[in-house]
Structures are given as C-alpha cells and as structure tokens.
Image 1: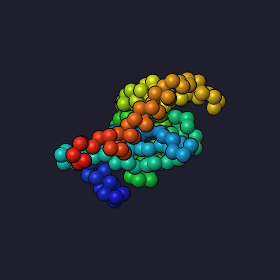
Image 2: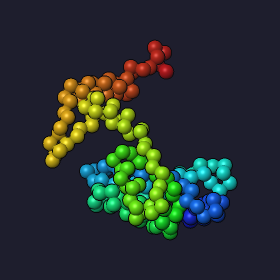
Image 3: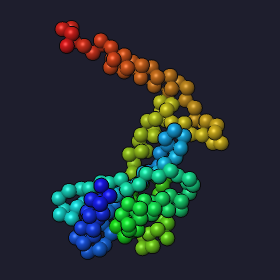
Image 4: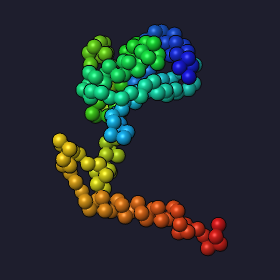
Amino acid sequence: MVKFIKFLIAAASTTYYGMPFAQCVHDGGTIQKRKFEAVGLQFVGPKRDKNFVFVIGFELIRKGKAGDIAQLLEHSAQHTLGKSIASVSNSVCSDAAAMAVENDDEMFPGGVTSELCLMHQAMKMGQTGVGQLERTKMKVIQNEFVEGKKLYNMVHRLAAFFSYSSGLKSPSGS
C-alpha cells in the first residue's frame, strides 16, 4: 500500500507542478487510556477523477503540545511518503484543540490554510448533554450530569431491547 501511495503522490506532484496539493487531516483520540494521533492525506488524484484519502500515520502521543503533534505529523509524512508534510500539503483540517499545530512556523514556513472541523463540536455538545462527555481537571470531574447519564442508559437499554428481542418482529414472525 505504501508503494501505491508514493506512486500517487509522485504522480500528483508532477500534475500539480511540484506545488503542495493535499490536505492534511489529523485528530487525536484515546484508546485504552492512551492518546494516539491519526494522520491522513486527502487529495484529488493526478487524473482529477478521484478523491483519495489515506491514513499515513497512527502514533502514540508521548507529549501533547502543538510542537510535539507537529513533529508527529512530520514523522508520519517522512516515514510513509519519504517527503515533508509541507511539500505535499497546503492546508490542514483539525478540530479546535489542534489548531495551534498549523501555526507551527518550522513545520509550515510559508504558512498554511487551516480549516476548523466542526463535526466534533456538535458531537461533543450532544455527548455533554446526555452526560457522556465529562471534563476533568486534575482527574476531578468538572461537569458531572447524573440525570443525563441515567437518561442515556435508559434509552440505550430500550434500544438494546428492541434490537435483540422480539420487539421488532412482525406478528407473522418474520
């Protein structure tokens, strides 16, 4: 797969006259209490007939400052593409927490167009509204919403009942 990605990157680079042509997309997440950063590239292919989206990195976050995340993006690009992220990417899409990464002058010396992904914002508002997203400060929950958690759990049990029981079967049994 890496050879195919490198082939497409080389072809697109030629098509777009060596100018950065891709959008870097990145986001952090937690898996089993460990923080990871996913890094992707999105671009229109050399024949301009397809939109390609590839994961170029998924790395453990050891330090979470903007400069550290910028280094992770660069490492992912170098490792997978053999090129710097700035040589292929002219814009970056991330959530609000990661916007400082795009302002790293060492990573993007000529500047880069930043795009705020609002998809997460709506999701986080909904999760907070039903008690599923808790903000902590020094491991102390700051916004506990017990009633929301109870409502969420009740709806979840109801959905499970109708999904795994005879609740959705028609009278004929099909």
